[in-house]
Length: 228
Image (tube, rainbow, N blue to C red; front, side, top):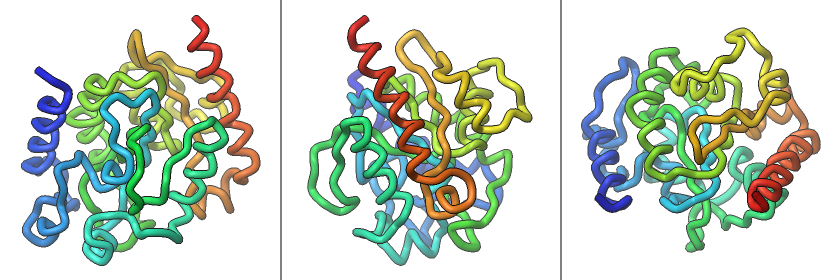
């Protein structure tokens, strides 16, 4: 079966999924007019099924943001997206703004694919991470088979390590997890846990200049791995 066909089947599975309580599927009637044939809204920006780099965030947002922006990221002004563009440039990857026509060179997704209520910063339940990791994230990684998965945030990183059965200290700080990276997820794919590059992450947890140093290690690893 071709990659695109396998991907379409996974998207259809997402559209009919009702595993989690407290989330709204983008295919639900309240949001369906803005749903797409992608695994989630973020993949409408960058969704290469042949990507070497897969970036995964915690969740995309809530139903209000989804409907206000018609199922896509706002054209500009989202700190997460703008910082991410800058960090990707730091490892030699250029992506355009979210609504620009552009080459598809990486894959963006969220671990939690359905939509929250109560604002972009509202909390996420543990079961949402577990359900989505097993039902969608792991099959997506197996389909794309990227060289690296870049996980934004501690909860996202822990969830991925859990679903792959990679030994790690559950109470470990994100910085400690990062020091031991990369983590081998499969023969072809490794994981780099990273700080989230959103406004709160940059202000409270790790400055953008320090995050650039973290990403420089990824660039170094990619350069080394290509020579093997």
